[in-house]
Image (cartoon, rainbow, N blue to C red; front, side, top):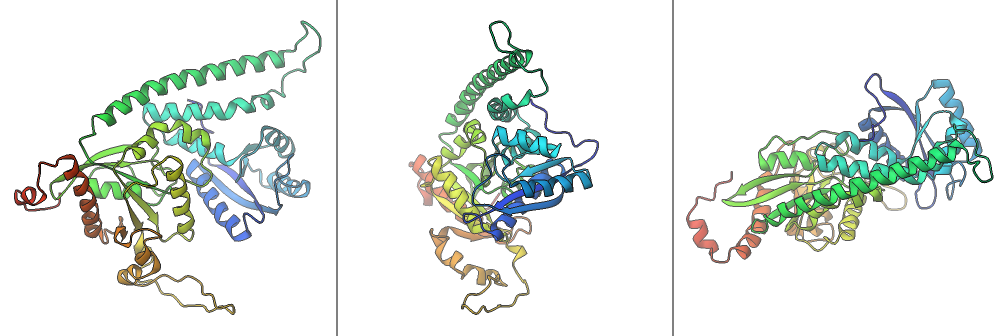
Length: 415
């Protein structure tokens, strides 16, 4: 696997860069930089400063204007910064030009996310998926990686070593892409075989934005030691556990979290992981209701689900982390235009009476549950909601079991 940048000896320092424009107003830009800072922290870097500039579109040469680039350069020299991270993807020429100007490492959002995935991947399949995505990211950028080699000369038989080595590296990268593609095809077939063997079992998949508490909920429902951490992309590998509620068994899958501007190469490479979502019978869409942009995160997840063809699956919308809203002291700050700052309710009942609880975020209000996985708030209600949907599917698979006769055999106790 391609090695992520090392942070073993000391934490590297970074500055963040983003643009403000009509599509991305200032308040949104600062929210996105908060997320980018969290990504940098997850990758092991310390953010020292943030730079923003108002531009309708990125400069084709250096992404930001010359004046802003000079300002960033002065800060980097004064504070000996290790890297600069941009919140958008950069072209190969932009990376080269910025590196020449700043004399430090330059990362864009996709490369930072790929680095985190390379750190988080544990299984052979996940490692192969990430490495394939890395090579696909590198291939179009190889042209700008050989400025240290001597210049080529024109004429027959006079090609310089720069072009020879570049072509050699292109061939190596293409060979690696082919190798990992074949390897993943084999692993995908094995995964498909495993999923096929589960056709007689109800499957439930946890989906949602990254760091909303899916793995914590997985641990709670499955009562297993699933890794959970307050960092982005704590889970890269799919984790499947058997769960039983009221004597009805089902398989619960924890999947990789979605995020804004998730690299397309990763989406393609994580095909088998996304197949776990495609082939699930029921989705638990987990949302961090305490996050200021949770509605946008819902839209991002719904858009991604729509793109992979799973938007019409039976879904329970699970608003997690309500403990961070309950009993909060708040004041309604009236504005001159008649609008009010959003202020959270102080009780669970008040939460359920809000538009989110009543409208189910444009879904069925009966399929909307407010919980706290960490504090175990309202978990019984969630279990009941899961049970009802799982039971409907279970008795469709096994029609010979009458629901009433089946329950007469048991005491309906939760596992």
